[in-house]
Image 1 (cartoon, rainbow, N blue to C red):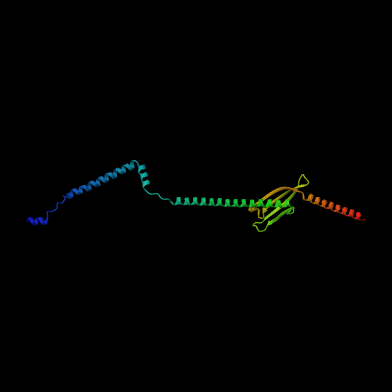
Image 2 (cartoon, helix red, strand yellow; image 1 turned 90 degrees about the vertical axis):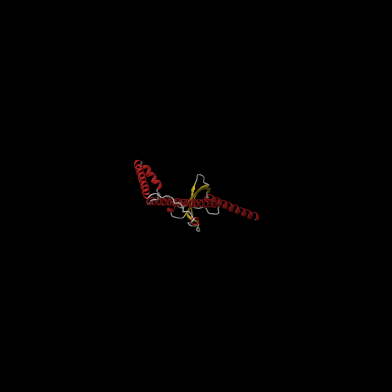
Length: 210
């Protein structure tokens, strides 16, 4: 019996269980304590509602409303339209500056040609300079008398041949130059004097030969 008892082993000790009535009392106590805590929280929230609403707002996530999204899209569209207008204005100003620079270069070149005599100085209106450019360049010349008979004021205007509504580039240049009429009269007088001198010299040679 002793051996069998040793082989069988001693029975394990079990933890004592609380009676069924005590467990029910414990559950009831927990429920009562929970209700008391809930009532205390309700009283606190009723006494200071702003604190609990602020905490609730902080805890709960807040997303974008449809009105906010539409307003943001409207602001973005307005800024993009304004940026497009600024870029278009900048491009237009750059094109105008380039055209005005080219007009200055053409006006200076034409005035040098008039001064050197390679191009005849005469009154002109909308004469084409270069047909290959688009739009083509034209020039106008006006000659005015000055206080000095030997000099005239030459007004040269170079512009693009296009509609005035498109704001064509233009440049005006004024320079005093020798009067072409006096130059022609002087050249004619010189030629007559040379012819008279040549005729007199030929007459003298004939008389001497006789």
